[in-house]
Image (cartoon, rainbow, N blue to C red; front, top):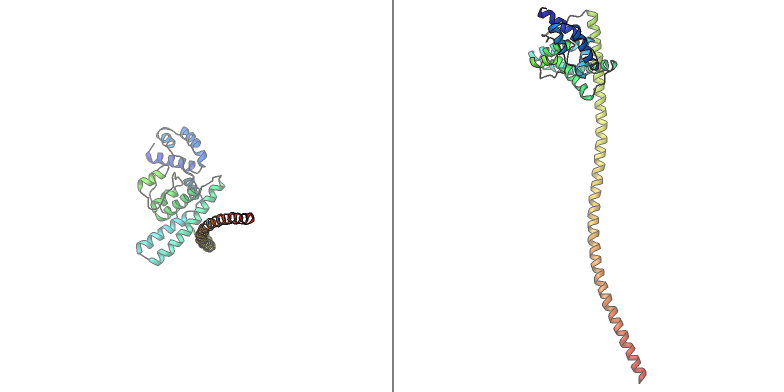
Length: 281
């Protein structure tokens, strides 16, 4: 079989497998390898099970929700090349909003398909989508729908792409053109996602301000309590000193009392002897 045909067969099988929940991947892969022949069977058997985050991004790619991110990627790179600071800032904000919205959409697709993502996996989904926006090679890899592992911007090397994609490694591709209706719908969806992302960001800022206020009040209270504790410790130290001085004074008075009592007894005895002597005369 020509190499191009073998790659095409492998990629078709891989695209089918990487759309499956990871829990179903291994059994289906082995079954599909058994249906193939020769070198293709061996290459199918060598396909690796995707991480939950990579599978989630594959669902998003298959659902056709990455075209806006790829277009924004090209615009962002153009702004960087032209050193257009204002445009770069605007596109940077739009990119963050769109990436967050797409990541949320991807997680929703995964959950609808029975997947459960940890916080770390959700973060990997967002990092992978961001990498696709920032780098054309990452975008090409993501658009295959055959990711095995997540990607991260700044770490996009040929070896990284080869290791992250199941099947043949794609070249940099340009997304297919869309008709006007699809363009308007996509733009409307992107604008809605951006508004929602901005609303969530504003809500998070307000909540942060409320928490900061409560934190400041709690800190003020604990500072007051600590000052009061310090005052009480100083008062206690002074009272303990007074108590020690009073105890020492009491000891001295006790000794004086003992001496006075002894003298009183001696005087009483002497008085008694004097009275008896007077009576005897």
